[in-house]
Length: 103
Length: 103
Image (cartoon, each protein chain N blue to C red):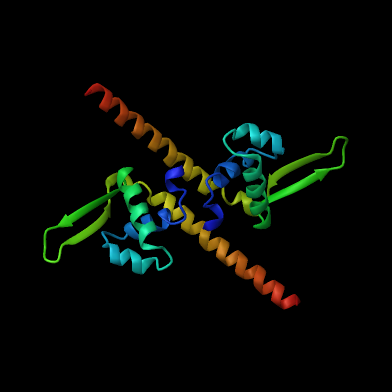
């Protein structure tokens, strides 16, 4: 599962589950990721057959990234991670609250 | 989800889902991980409240690592990742087979 080990990759996939996106959309969705890292992550997901990169010959040229059918198989993975992430956030908020109460 | 971002952490959790383990058991389960990295990963999971480290005052001293109740909440995450991993392995084997057929 090294493929999904990168810090941003599953998050990236979770945004692509909403539909095709341009590079600039993804930059906006994930302001913390560098341009270089986003490029590398998209390329890795493309090479693994999870992301399709489409170039539309318009002026200016439009490039879109979309999940392939294989990439769509990551939906349950993203869902369960998201659910766990929400639970974790709630737990940590409760702990922080309890600590501030007892301080 | 940076907590689970490490290359080994979910795998480590998956072994602990089977029950408590000693450090040496985990080394055997994951021969690819270095002793230092395993120590760091266990400590991170312990600090996050997912792993409980218990020292049994025997001679020689016995140290066991076990999932906490919170750590057990990672089970569905591990399950879905494992399922996806198996699918991915099967897919890649099929692709490799098709390529060797057409070569």
